Length: 421
Length: 192
Image 1 (tube, rainbow over the protein chains, first blue to last red):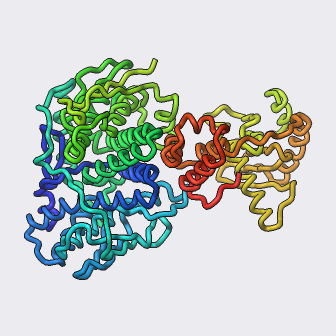
Image 2: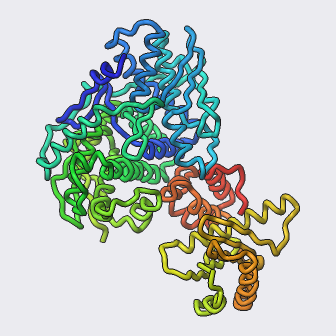
Image 3: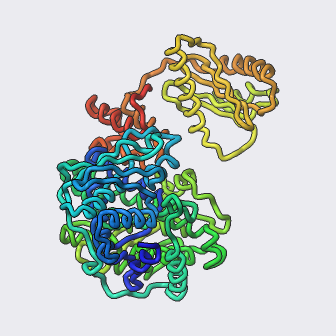
């Protein structure tokens, strides 16, 4: 499958603000979010269990995608299928891989520029020594590719990362073998993503042309010679939302079962992931030359910045996000008629008994903070110190309340963000 | 030590940019003086200097080369940093202009330290509970400091309220915090 063929199966549903490879929903996230997400899964579950859950979630998510791609491309032989899988994985920004596997599934995956391992080393490698490998997503992807290439049932292969550049090895190497693995779990497809009718919020005339421009730009984004997407001052992946959702909700459910007293801490961490996402991905898009050429210089105007962030959310595949009410300095209401979290939850677990829109809620709060507390015209550097000054502890200044959540059966998801008294 | 006393101690030391007094073993800021106002977080700087001196001391002890009057000299691009233990309770970190002659720096240091030592209180250190020190250590060094306490919480099963009152925790809970701290910081052991 050449890049044009990959582009041909990419679609964006304007009404729902969601992106798909064929039937498979995907969303853009940067390496800051991806690393924080995986770190939180391991914090909640421990490294061994966390790696197992992340690997299985990646396997299930990529199996859905690859199965469809192989059929669409008419890829029949193992060599065709493995080659296609590698091309797609690199095009999504996850890194260039080399997969060698025999007919019974034994083999190995190697890569020296895998998104997770490389980005972890870049971001944290000077500060922290890592004890465990970082590339569960590649492991899960590799399992799915080999299982489908050799027509094995899902759950027959397991993967162990033996070398990882995040642990200062020169390359990443993942060993594949037959063995007991978690049973496959159902993932969400396009046809099962429900949504309420699209609504119009504030500033729609401003938002819609920006979405159009951003989608055009994103349509041309693909992995470089390393299989990485380096744009907007971050490493970006087109990643499968089934992976994010399966890992977050499995981790939260397990935490609620085993340590209910600290379930609130887990929820706060996943909301924090929403802050990390908006600050880094959205913020760096706003500060990029591409943005300036598309929209113009950034004003210090909370309404304009919020409108811009809504446009970015829709373009990246986060769902149809809108703001029906906004009072500068006091209140922001974020509503989604579709987001990428709720449909997955309902599809896999049924109706939720509490709000489950963690990333959306965290993003809503970050919208308010970025709109009111950042002098965009001064083009600040979005580094850790600045993040801490905005989001750490008592300096936050804003609080959220989820007043409706589609995962609980409400028509929309709605988060009210208010200035703390 | 009052501000005026520390200011008196640095009188006439032209190449001095700043000085930080850190109370040990908790690496807490005791006092600081800077030539120019800036956005430095003086508490953080004092803590890092304290940890650095402690690490240096432990490393030299492991080599059998430690002596109580050691100086740690760091030559960075634009500053010369000299760290020294004043006594078992205080560490002094002095920051000089990079082009100040080392011999002159040592002379200034000797005089400053004599003045400072006269003003330091005689203390009897009260060792704080290990749980408290572990939590502070993680807050200071975790790669995502904004999430440090929540990360310890989900790893240990202890609520953030319990962690805020870590002095009340039982030994088994402190062990959980230490295990979490090692994981979060990528350390095989933590010497506090």
